[in-house]
Length: 106
Figure 1 (cartoon, one colour):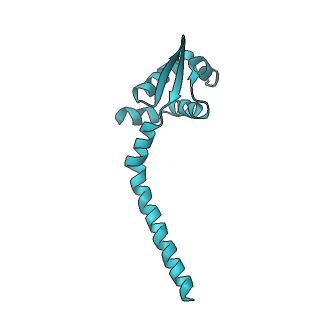
Figure 2 (cartoon, helix red, strand yellow; figure 1 turned 135 degrees about the vertical axis):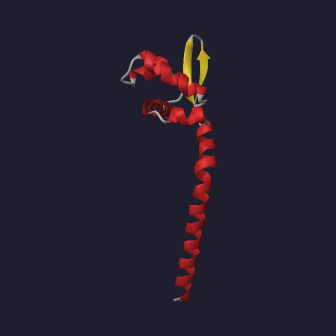
């Protein structure tokens, strides 16, 4: 989980994930065209994303394609966001019921 949060902490890596979200399965060359940094810098960022399991790689002939792996982000949602979200939804449902009861009394 530490590698995951470290990878997401960097804006450039989040930008690469956004690019893969829009068009999954891009080569290094395709990603470099959309970034304002050297090929070596993009490669380093992609390697960190791979280590965090946020990006998976598939070789197609001699071309290395990068794909977004949404599973770790889903795990973050379940562990850190989902449990807080359920309380909010529950509170909204309670408020809705209370408002409906008040309007029925009138």
